[in-house]
Image 1 (cartoon, rainbow, N blue to C red):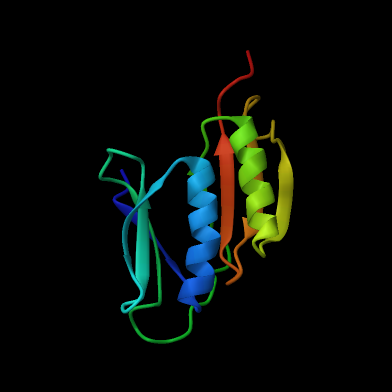
Image 2: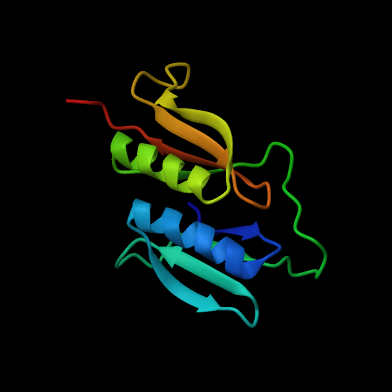
Length: 131
């Protein structure tokens, strides 16, 4: 359904460091990185799509987070959600909701919410029940 998600950033090196640590926790790998553009993209190993891409806005204006916009990244386990949240907060993110169950979505929804250093809202979530 989704080809790629593009997140606007203001400082490429800062954003790349933040997202590289987060993507490593999720098990995603860098598909490309070009500081001259500047932009970078990650993918699941061996899977061409979807891509998660960061970069400056194409119109040359400042990157600004949208109200009501959020990207949710799928984690393989609740432990990965916890590690991603700690990595994000340690990398300068602002907390928008600590890791935990969100039964209002469904009984096994476990997620964490934060804003990257540019203010973009992200979620890392797992839908897998504990066994």
